[in-house]
Length: 632
Ligand code: COA
Ligand code: AMP
Image (cartoon, rainbow, N blue to C red; front, side, top):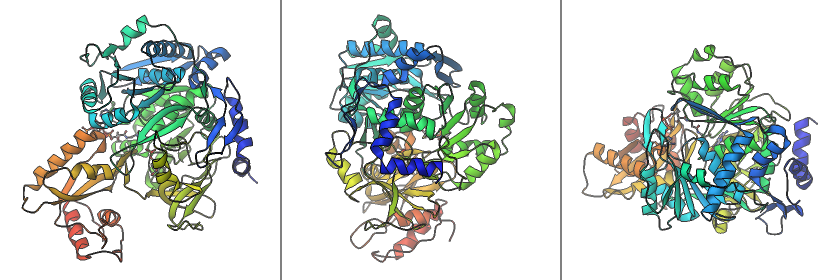
């Protein structure tokens, strides 16, 4: 038996022993009574009775153990031409002070705080300050529009919102404050205070009586100490797209999260204390939570917070410059970022300018790593290029080529094997386990390992409906895929109304709800179509109400604006066409999957339940006019 098999088998046959040992790497105020409390199945609780503080494990502990002068955080911002380094001691000082600011405003254990910030160190400081106090943060990605922020404010009911005056998107200044003001106007819940970090590039107008200036507050604050919390207390809520307009509030517990992330840094990423680890993502996504902030700091690494893109800031050599300048060992990003580099610098000429001798691994996730991008990146870098699959819900990888256990040969198109703790199976729609290479629905046997979602924020029923009820005894991932004869897992895409645009998870169901509000639209379908850069892009097909025959271009523009205003630019909704009818089953279900296949030029068969097969020809014609449905 190889090393991986040994570790994996143990994690499944003796989860309590396995994770109990892993938990020794975390510092606890009080040891757990039970590693896995399964008394309320399927609501499992890891390290029940244990008490800890995540911020203590990320910062104080390293300072006490001799890493005070090691760089904890490098802020690299090509868009503001800034590079700033914080040692562990400096980061601890800033975080303790900001925790003091929050606690001075009455934020205490169990309170919620929303963080709506660009990629600046203050975002990390705010997250860690919340965890220091046992407050629950909910970071909202800056590319979301006020309406999305308002939904999250109403659901999380924050006492305080932490934000900044704005972001710099390559060269464009984006003001955050007017968006925050609008969101608070739209929301029923009104946060008591907003703390605003004023950036020199954008000045925010403050609302008297509500808004407070970050710097002013920090200057007057007294540092706050760590508060012990229970292992099962929430560390954060992170909202992610579901199949409807109401996002799911993924809850992360404190103990399981710390244990799993600490373990993953060494065993999956081969990242050790002192290594430079860079996740080129955004703190607003789960990758940012786990691998910009918590994972690297729990492991005593140096993390990089990068305010820029893979291209255009200033050129397609941006990533190579950061890797070389900061001696990055591990880079984690989305395949889209690499496709963007490939498009602008197909021969990798920019790479030749930089010394990448410290660089060891490229990890990619967030969307399927297509074999072309894999081959291109691998040939260019001549280093391991590792696809790994996970979800906001799991918080860390479900399948990966674990570099710290036993590296396996790569099979392009596969994210390799299940990570220890994740017992992955493929089922048919009746729940029968499928054999090798049979494509079906991917599930994970319960209990999930530590660090994964214990439930949804104040929505246990929705948790059960979405993840457990479809296949009792399993967690349903909503991804389709198969497992080959060597145990390699192939994830082929979502089986629900969720799409992946540039590694960002979006709900087509939510987009349909918005499109349907257009006064001229009778019915509509939004689905994801293949895009060579962003993986997928949303496309809308609409049927107009009888008697409405306005210009198609005008309607398209109005729909694009509606989605931009309600969800945000990040939705990348740019195409909509008018059709006479939509294909449906006899029971009235719109055949989105069939339309997606037609658009992508994939073979398809009309389902036997289809109401009128002739409509598929009309759809094909409409999609051809938009430049899709090219292949037979
Ligand atoms: N605040 C405000 N607006 C934002 C934003 C933010 N934080 N992030 C993105 N946007 C806007 C962009 O400006 C753009 O707006 P536009 O339509 O007005 O041009 C829109 O949202 C789409 O952004 P993006 O998907 O980033 O597209 P892009 O064309 O600007 O950049 C890539 C293309 C490939 C460079 C970029 O998509 C990329 O780096 N992708 C990798 C994604 C990634 O790291 N995902 C993390 C998951 S692991
Ligand atoms: P998110 O919750 O934003 O991380 O998105 C999770 C979804 O992204 C998954 O359900 C998958 O559909 C997709 N995904 C993430 N990583 C991969 C990967 N390595 N391969 C295939 N799909 C992926």
